[in-house]
Amino acid sequence: MTTHGGRRSQAERDAITVEIGYALFSAAFAAAVVFGAVAGPALLFDLPDTLSRVLLRTGAVLAPVLFAARVISVLMRFRRPPQPSHPGRTNPDS
Picture 1 (cartoon, one colour):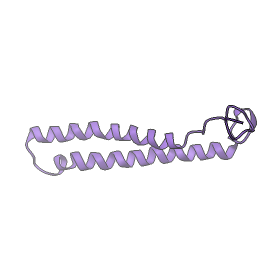
Picture 2 (cartoon, helix red, strand yellow):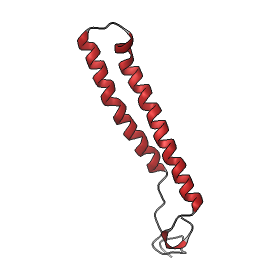
Picture 3 (spheres, helix red, strand yellow):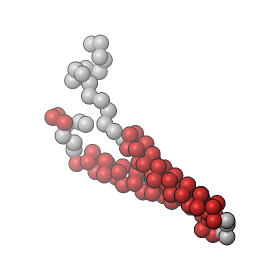
Picture 4 (cartoon, helix red, strand yellow):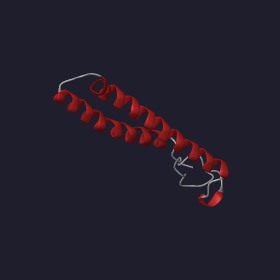
C-alpha cells in the first residue's frame, strides 16, 4: 500500500486479481489430482462395492478440503503487510 488513505493503486488491484486467479486454478488442479489419485482406482477397476464406495467418498471429502486449504494458504501469503503505528517511522521504538 503505497498511497495515502488506504486506497490501492491499479497495479496492486491487478496483482490481487492475478493472485486470486492463481489460487483458484492451483487449488482446483490440486483437488482434481487428489480426487483422481484416491477415487481413480474405484472408477477404473472392478473393486468390491464397499471399497469402491469408501474410495469415492474419501476422494469427495479430501478434494474440497484440499481446495480450501490451498486457496487460503496462497491468499494468506499475499495479504497486505500491517500498517506501522507511527507513519513515517521504521522502528516502533523511535
